Length: 104
Image (cartoon, rainbow, N blue to C red; front, top):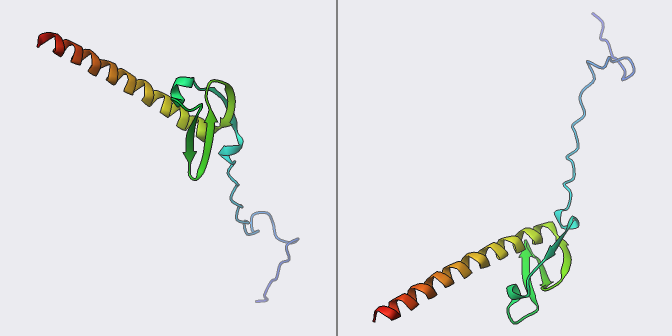
C-alpha cells in the first residue's frame, strides 16, 4: 500500500480538522449608560451618594437627572429600595413608641 498525502485543497470539507472557536469578548457593562433621578433626600445632608461595583466607585449627584453605568444603576436602585424599607421600619417603630407612651 502506498501512503497518501492530501493537501488542504485535496481534503474534503468533512475531513478538514475543525478550528477552535475564539472566545467572544464580553461587552463591558460599564459602557452601557442608564438614566436615573435620585431624590435629594437619598443623599441626606450631602448632595450626592457614593455607589461602587468591583472597584468602580462613583459619586452620584442627587436632585438631578443623570446617566450612570448600568451596574451602578442597579446598586442605586437597590439602595433606593433599602431606604424605603428602612423608612417603613422607622415609621412603625415610632408609631409603637407613641402607643406605648400613651399606655404609661
